[in-house]
Length: 136
Image 1 (cartoon, rainbow, N blue to C red):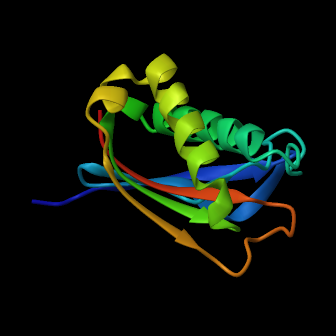
Image 2: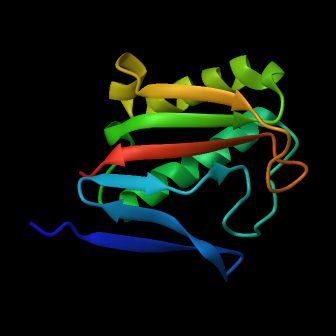
């Protein structure tokens, strides 16, 4: 049995990036880190962690839909924090987003890991999500 792999490219402000937005491998979808950088400009949306979380969640939703699945199929979330003081704000924003776009996750959340890192790829990035989902 041959497992297929399909890659979905990522662009910020119309410029193709050197990494994929998503890769479907077998029955799983692996997303590249989703942060508060907007797809339209490639810049961080604001200095507010809740806003950055919403932008990241929008990108996650769109990437999963492009790959033929949905947020309802998320099985693992890894959240990188610049500062753990933002934990409650991010988790609350994430939960509110799920209530609106993936109600099953609000009731039955995926596995989750959080960690604080020394820095993210842009100095004003506060949070980044790493997602694994099942194919739809």
